[in-house]
Image 1 (cartoon, one colour):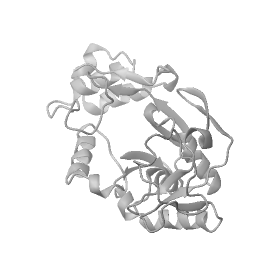
Image 2 (cartoon, helix red, strand yellow; image 1 turned 45 degrees about the vertical axis):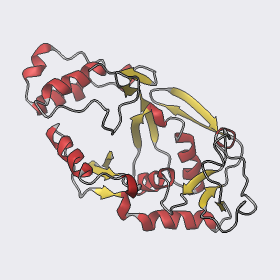
Image 3 (cartoon, rainbow, N blue to C red; image 1 turned 90 degrees about the vertical axis):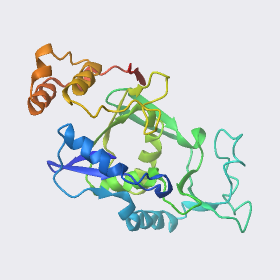
Image 4 (tube, helix red, strand yellow; image 1 turned 180 degrees about the vertical axis):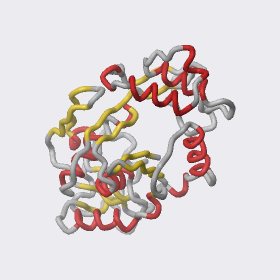
Length: 263
């Protein structure tokens, strides 16, 4: 789920493309949590599951330029491969089997300057090879959908977890092919749970408390090194947000990929 500002308006986008993994009621619960913590948005919630035609149009535009091909390789076949070796570039290796749609990736570095992590570059062809943009089950891949949606919603700045840093050059590669603007990126340290795993949407995760909001918000402000004063704990939620926004400086975020979260 992404929250975006478009022309001064706040938007929420639910990234629910992977329908088999969507937990009924989870999106509504997340929206309620956002509201509890003082987040607001101006327009109707955008759902990727309702934007399939846009992704299909982008895929067609790549296909007519000869930039895609069908791939019959399964995950088990590729389990020992560090990158996709291009087995199906000429024709599907195993005709008659379900296929995924891959994007042809040319060699060469994609480079950008991240606002938190600094200069980053990757040769996508060498790192991962030709990427899947539509899966064998005919669901569109996140990498294609997010590029199309960011452009459609006029996103200029993206702030997200550092676990997606490696994925960003692939998105920039797609943006260039589709002649779309590239936003400014900031990949912030990912919160990790006591067991060392990243904070995740799973049963083992550290959950937000259903109780008072302020103690949890104060903890986040501490993790961001904003050093909230003790009296801020007694403030109203709008006042606490105003205090935090006034003192926010992305340059103060640590240049790290992970940040430990204690229970």
